[in-house]
Amino acid sequence: MNEEEEMQNDALDERAKRADKIIRNPRKYKICAGCESIVAQKINLCPNCHAYRFVESESLVVAQAQELGQREARSVLGSDFE
Image 1: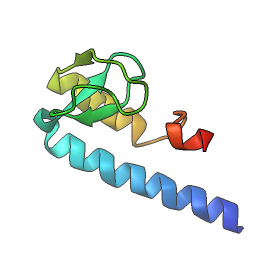
Image 2: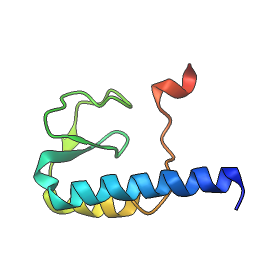
Image 3: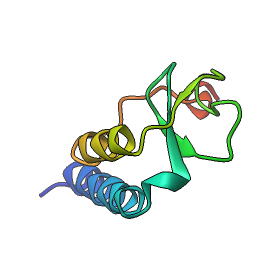
């Protein structure tokens, strides 16, 4: 396994750990209606896309966490432009 593959595996492992944390306590999270990121319940403005509408259904949060925890990140973040 080369270094790039190892980094991708580490990133996927980290996403899976975060997804597991969300799945165990979905009421602490919600989904951004703009970019479908999972954010903390206390957030009023999405840090990724600056949307202000959210989906708060616990079952949808769990489903989204399961999906996002199994694939690599595809979101474009503000830090990507720096």
